[in-house]
Image (cartoon, rainbow, N blue to C red; front, side, top):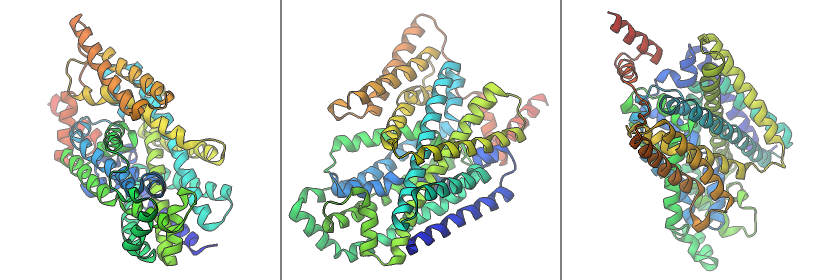
Length: 498
């Protein structure tokens, strides 16, 4: 076994140890489990948000793009994600003030059951596939550096990720995400100059690339249309995706939600070009390799063993953090939007905890089953899933906070027509280079305002607000007294009685 394999094994053991500590010391209720007791501070929130969104695509994927057709401009892939998170900072106050637990919960308040059911199913399907994709990506990396059997490695990865997510919920995920993001950012930041130096320095790397493909040294090779499209895509998916929005719901207060989002955006923007430069080191020296091997080969060839192990552990950290974020997101969706809403509305806190942990185990097993099937094309399905999850609900969710004249059918039309438009645009191979998510969101927005305006003109009443005075007051008490949402609501009712 390569020494890197043992570094990764030690890293996984640390994750389990953290989860055990958190499980016994920090998790006392289902709100702790799903929302970390709404107590995340700005640094914790920024770290867990960044860790959830920096996955295999932002590490191995960016290096592969840099080696391939994007060159240095591949760094925009993550920088655009940082800009998208920055834009979500302006939505953050609405998210925290809503006192919600899931995205479909907010849509249900405003638009009713049909909208709620559709968005819940879309979100669950996407997170289910996303978990399998990250488990598979993690396993592939470990197999590459260890030479171990793929099935054995995949089972091990699925057990570790499922175990530490199941033990402590979002509290556990948040704590382990801090370790993940430190590994990702510091590990890559330390490794990149060492790898660059081992490859002959920037002058050698740039000279070798300039002799064959000088355009790959440009910062805008990817094209402004793609850069703007990526920013829009990330803004839409981050503002509607459960794995991201759940962090805003869990913030200590509105100020924290905004500040944590801003810090995350800065972190991601600073990190963006690091894996791209590592990919260029591979491009300068290796011809005809699989682009996905650009980062591992550059690390193994141009860095000492310990640094190479640090790089690969960083990649494993990225994929594991995304997998755990998807698991806790899907667990929260099922528990809150299916079990408590339609199956057992009067469930006790203990029942909610048991169902939550059971769902995480079942999701982990199902994701393992998909990850072990090498015939399934995970990546195309993953991209399609994120598009379908966000394109339709985007307008209904975002504008639902601020547009008072929205109607129930306006929200439902936005979700249905936006999703159908995104699916059709994807089927048409994205004409004119316009992303399916962007096209679907545009149709969603038009449908939202058009149907709402027509119905209001016909005398149809506006849908009830997603954030009521009761939610605002519960939020105020929660922030003022530093107590949980349930305690805040109980205190509000007590004040009303008195």
